[in-house]
Image: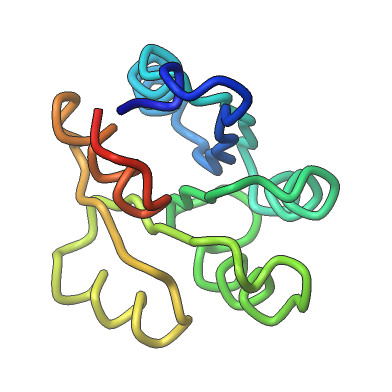
Length: 133
């Protein structure tokens, strides 16, 4: 069951991604499945939106133009209010480096780029404990 099939339960995902092409693709795929998407193109903007909106899940690119993804992850996981929000790294980094980063900063997982547009919504639903679309 996707979020669009769950009345009153539209889930909000914050996408912190500086690459416009990647951001558009992820937004389109998730909106099609009923997710509400917030977007930040920088780490600073992502922290600000996360603090103001408290989304249900955060997708974080590591290669941001202002603050690196590791710094953003550390901030989000140390903030009392935001620490419980699932934080998923979305990266083109080699899987071993991504796993190390996920473990080091307490992220809930990572998704490799390029994303598989068919699998991506299922992965997000799993992180949110929603039955898969």
